[in-house]
Length: 77
Image 1 (cartoon, rainbow, N blue to C red):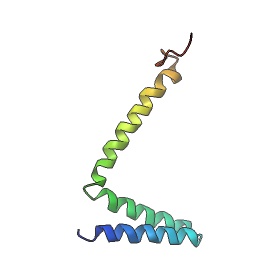
Image 2 (spheres, rainbow, N blue to C red):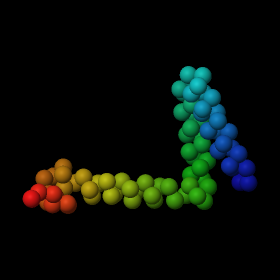
Image 3 (cartoon, rainbow, N blue to C red):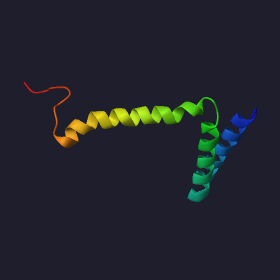
């Protein structure tokens, strides 16, 4: 697990090279490999929780506007 940073770098580089060569399938595959490798690191382990809390905040902010409920800011007047 010591060289996971190098693997992430080379997967991102492979994705970039495939994108520049206009090979979208290869770029997507390399990007997915890089994302999986990043999520397997201790730093990347927190990303799913962060995304969950971010999406929850977006949902709470947009629900009143979508359901016609009370306004959060009370901007009238």
